[in-house]
Length: 148
Image 1 (cartoon, rainbow, N blue to C red):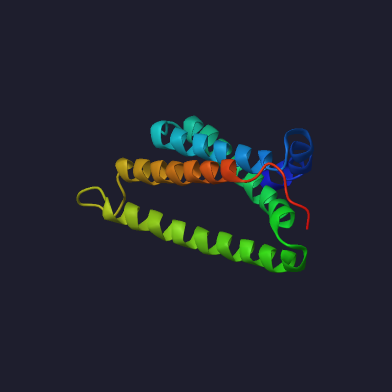
Image 2 (image 1 turned 30 degrees about the vertical axis):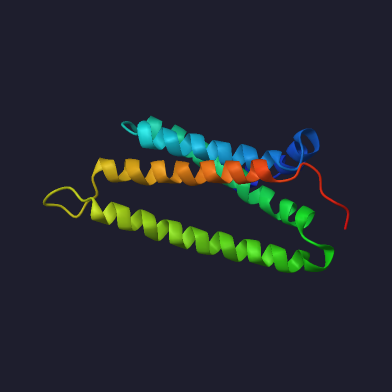
């Protein structure tokens, strides 16, 4: 649902703030949402608010990626680059999910199969670390694209 609401903002943000802005903003929202979930998750309202931050950031980031791929890929390789973007996002999502499940499974409450609260904190803190790495990578992108 958030993707439908957020995706139309990407071209506006690109025109107003530059081609890196939507992805950078999305990653910063993911970072904020992940840190918030790691820290504040005692009530349903906290979890909902934190999840909206995280989801909005993911929606903004995923909507921004194809346009960046088109901007930076050589003209003859745009389709291949967009296909690779999709594959990398899918594989990254699968690996990230498996890592989260492994962490949650390894930290169960004594006498139960359920993960402890600390395991969720670790998972969301790890998500924040990856979002921070993403922010650093986006900041390294050139501000202008060389002509093709």
